[in-house]
Image (cartoon, rainbow, N blue to C red; front, side, top):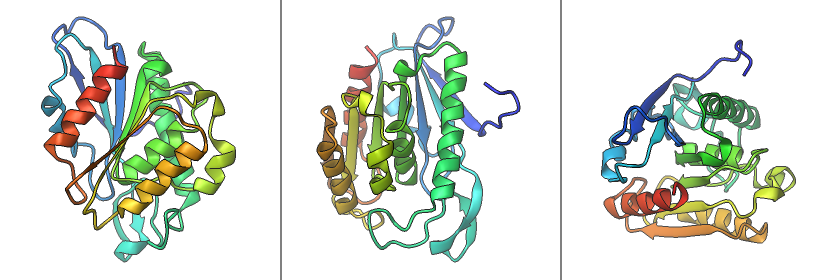
Length: 231
């Protein structure tokens, strides 16, 4: 890693009973618009992962920036949201690509700390979900999987040419609330259709009777997915 490279501020939690053993897997988990790195920290004990799994959870803080749809109010955001018109949401391509590079830097740090890319999972909620797609589908090296919660694939048209076709069997967990008033479930459905059309063969699709949030059933399903891909 270039030591001049700026790393995002992160909250880090290591799971596992043997604290002397180095983590074998890492989960880089991106928060949603206006939240921060602590947003999903309380979920970790709720996952009830086996004590013998050594997993490092990395929760980065998005930069603070003005957000157009919120009257230019500064808040933590991975990219600007200009409009809510369609699945691409008139996206801020520059912001997306800058945040992608920042997440890729965190992946490289995990590599330096002894966790290979094949043992790294990208997870995200809402805007963070968009970043998991944005970064994970373009990764040069295959990731262990993606956890995509209450979000969508931005820049779907450009992703057709940019996604890495060598990793079409990468496990992808997609979950969404059926009553989501913020990111309509149709956006997630369109993303799922995009993945299937582009030959991603290992996707899991789950819906839950909830709004723009998480619930216990979803947390249990995330746990099962994590346990499966970190064996």
